[in-house]
Image (cartoon, rainbow, N blue to C red):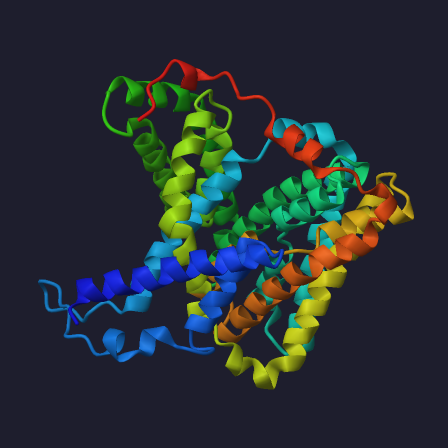
Length: 433
């Protein structure tokens, strides 16, 4: 089968399988991401090994003009997945409400801080206990454990009618701050790991200076975003505003890693934060979600499973179980202690801690970045995928145990509050393309 036909067939299998698995997960009250990761595991070397099928493995060579070797299909999947990660982190940025972060106050901040510090230390300690190098593999395992996926907790809290409770508000605010802290941790760890492999202290100092300069210049450049989007709208070209957003996001991602020495996803996340402050936010939302979730995000989640091999984890079962246990306990205890320090009582602190247990997209993004950059090996990556699946599964039942039934209120009122009235933005006067 010719290479273009291979690509078409493989993408057909990946996207269709991801969407069907996501729908099936929703039917059993699990988030769609759970089904998409799980189907990736089943399609990968864990069970079906789809990339080893004759129709994909025995194709005629697809050579470039210089006679170079053909690009493996896994390489293509990784490239598309990388684009999906960049767009996914852009969406995470544009959905981050800086004003809400300021409003939720010190409880959310200290909960998030505890949920970063303790899992970071727990992950590094787990790596050390199992004989893995503390620098940088142990540190990066800690960075993976700092992530939180609030969407799973928010869905469960809505079902319990507790999203508007003090604990629910604290969980949502802490999750947003946790994501920001997690991205900062990833950026610093990745930059220092890259510098530490080159030379001594001066290399690390230069890396830190590059990192700070990137953030300062990138944040300053954000003041021109409105002018850029107004110019794009004046072009009267098809999807000009969305094209301008994608161009700027890709430029930020490129400059973050090439010039700033930090992860490319840090640049796309920052671009999302800055675009969220413009009056074009609603237009961007309407365009970027279909582009991202129709193909790039399904490819990303399935690619996680295609690169993981759960069968190879048999001899390392103790490490996997320990990593899952540390991920649950460290996040729950760390966030709970932070909430208690900020003034919550013991039951409230426990609920906040439980609500922060679930990992998700951010954890997978960090793990994928570590694998592709050689900061963790494939066994640790596979164990991290299992950890994400396990924490995703245990969070809803733990939340239902933590919130007594007497607190349950009607969910429709919560959904109505979340939706809110439509924004009055330049969307109303601009062309929809």
